[in-house]
Length: 216
Image (tube, rainbow, N blue to C red):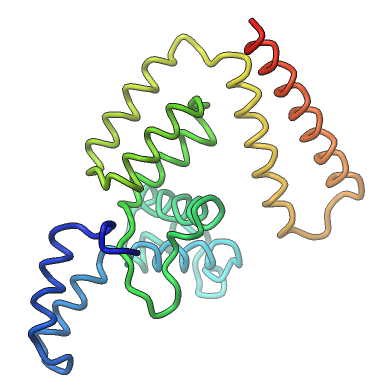
């Protein structure tokens, strides 16, 4: 991440760190505080790996939620948001995932989860999604501000998504399912081909509808 991505608080921490020897305890405390901004990414990654692999069962837990609550000490909604946010970050915004050994601030996981909902569940228009994405990733808006914007757009859509938005949402869901199925085996013989045909059909329907809307 470049300097423009850092908050004033992070920049202040780094200014103090520059005046201290790296081996000092004070420096180490500051380094830990600076790393906090990206710590949820590491936790989300690990939790998603545990969930996908079923390691929690080897460790004596009946389900992933019980493992999170009893061992990691986080509630089910938090675990769900962390894993969904990391999965979205990895798939859609991989440039934001810190490389090994790198300390890079990332947005609040709750804001990333709202981005995921806007793109994959709520059928936000491209313009509305771009505005929300800009607020989260470029303007570094606080989570309450992002939540407010999300709620405003979602409320405006209560009358129901347009046909093109419905198709776009279905297409995103189908593509996401295709990505998930790549990790599973064995699958029914015709499943991948059937899903590929469905994606092509949705793409064609969306292209036709958008062309008609532009012509109108």
